[in-house]
Length: 295
Image (tube, rainbow, N blue to C red; front, side, top):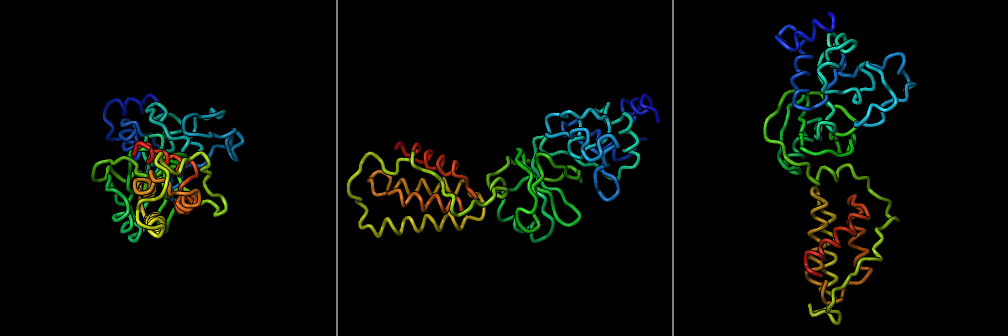
């Protein structure tokens, strides 16, 4: 089929177009970049010129990079919203062979939490905020508004697909899009080495009060720090928020009397980092808690 003929169909009646292309054009019109998937639900292979990334590849989702190939190459990086590209050779031939449609979530401002089995779905229902959900063959896609780094196997049966990744389009789903929560972002954070604790030399542990702690005995402070560590360690979701709230609670009780020492802060920061928080986030959370309390 020639390009002008296909474009006339796009501008008019799309009913005779291949079903995957009809779906792709409809989705692309909403601003979500799409690409065809061949048998096996895999992207089409690179052309001969691009084989082995000899062309230089397409390094990120914002730019085609040095590669000027008009073909359906480089998997997620080929995704587009341009109907002319989607209906032009060699894309037109690819749609004739396509079995389904994929999209690049990150370029569309989305993140897909791919739940691959019933156990993963049960976990999400207790650990993550409700959002738009799409049924898959074995589980569900939970789709959030916002982008992050893609990461596979963040926990059993759970993958995250956002930037530099593609996801199958399986329908509009049900429910309203929720903003990407910290609980999902935290899943992709690698646990740091225990030896690399957050630097906090610039964090002031005590408030302006100084002096003796008025809260009964030192045992009270020790118990409070231990409970704070336990609260952070036990967090199964919303780790960012849990760390901040815990820091806020500790500071609200002991931050103005001068009883907190560098050793206490090190323990709190270490607990947070063991849950995947970065050194910078620990410092930011502590500083934000102090600011909230006017310290």
